[in-house]
Length: 219
Image (cartoon, rainbow, N blue to C red; front, side, top):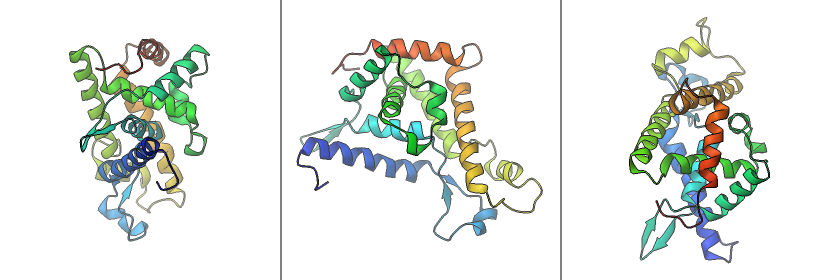
């Protein structure tokens, strides 16, 4: 914070990074009690939130503003919007599947822009009824993350990662990351897109929605 002389920029960074901390506290998947012994004492949960959602929420909140001692969240992030619209115009916007598959180390500014755009799509729309529907879908997705994408977390965790009853594999963490990535995409497709619309068609509609957005618009 002290390294930034521009107060607005410093506030945006604090809001962005602070959101990550909140996401971890609110959305981590609790390790089933039967498996706590496999982890260090301080570790009681596993991160199950996809990178796109973690960064998308952070970029959504980073554009909040302080006025008269109050924090106003939800305004459009003009920098992310302009960048995303330029990516779309140039045909360089990462695909939805790439967004779900990319590793954190490869999560470049292009992915940040797309992640912001998807979260903004979930939370804002000029039609109130549609905005309400999308928020409900996002809540269902967040709830699925918190349950580790399991219907019955305790039992399903064992079936997935300890089918022979001999304990967790030494490569469990890598397996977990791949599982969370695969299930994160599958759950997104099921809740957001459904069976009647292809991923490409949904992305095409979303890109058109983003292109129609205006800087400083209020919804």
